[in-house]
Image 1 (cartoon, rainbow over the protein chains, first blue to last red):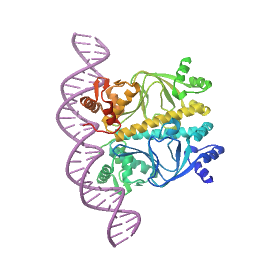
Image 2: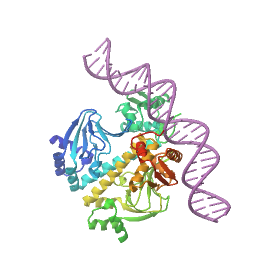
Image 3: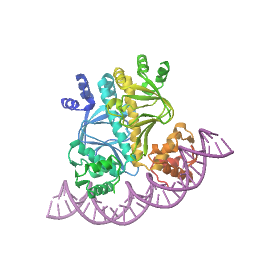
Image 4: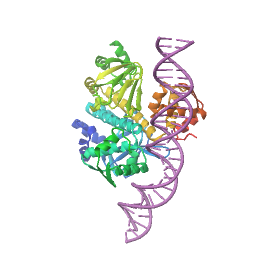
Length: 228
Length: 228
DNA sequence: AAAGGACTTTGACATCAGTCAAAGGGATGT
DNA sequence: ACATCCCTTTGACTGATGTCAAAGTCCTTT
């Protein structure tokens, strides 16, 4: 229990709450562990609550009838998922699988609802979380509909390097998963990485990618320039 | 004022509030009118509040550098938009334009925030609204990434006919706008409509479309079947 | 009724990206 | 060290969809 309460402090969804709320949260939160690849829920399952990632990584995704996968979000420690079904009462809108060995906290819907009713700060944090995800989804829609794959990849590389401020970025997911994140397939991703290498925009060796021409990537990822 | 208060009762975001809250809402809400095509806000504009549509229709969309447009949502009477920037404090994530002559209520951010802090019912309604939009966006991402245009169109036609329960549906948007909603262009939409006609799945005359083979549309829109 | 303009349709074409197949490379476990 | 498996890369090909251009249709305005 003390362990659970410790986690709560570092989770943005639970920032700035009253002491009593933390105790209540750690009382209703249930810790669950999943092996890599293990399924947490499936699209359409009844949403009996939502989750917060403690450790590992959880993949939220959709699958087509032909088996192609589109990742909606990769949730790392401190991030929540499955909130949507708490507030709409329908089934989960997507699948969730542990992309790495993962530990999560599960908060049952009813108990959490009554908690959120009592604490405006918790409600506002939740609205901020939902809004953030909505903004991210709007960006993904924009990318899928209005950018070509090279543009999406360039933007993603800039995003990764922006976090570190570094010229060398490490892909934190396999290339197959990166393809699913960018709305394409591994073969296409591989070809475009090769092309960016040839053009001297990047220098990639395995999961390590050195950015050689940031401006060039910006033209492709942000300004819609096409590859020659 | 009485007029404004009258509107509030029928808006799902404001359902089930205390009488005092309605009065407060009608006090802080500002009515604004827009001509057809008039811009309400642009992506990146500072979000000083959010909107509720009273009459008309508001288009929320993204535009690519080449000018292609992807509609995120068409907001009709009773629907809200621009909420995201209330809770994240960043600029609006997309553009908003009146698709028809429209009247909206504007709720300034700060005043609304304090209101939501006082009334858990309003907070829960807002979370439900955000969740609903999130679910819709997840569906759009799925469609854009995992379905081809015929599938998206078939699904949309089924959606329209489901509302009426009727075999004949009327497109409530121009075909150009429908294309932007489905993530394609008018030429492609036109060709696919022609193909569905040829195959005997529908019979379209202008904006009127009669569904001749519902099962066939379901195979295309829901099961990923390809057109011959 | 005529004229103008916007929306829609059709055709020819280019191209991006997915499919299928096979080879290459790297990690893991025996 | 070796074998196996999985991920990744490359090649040849196909197909869906966007681009460009022109013709057609509908609606509004004069």
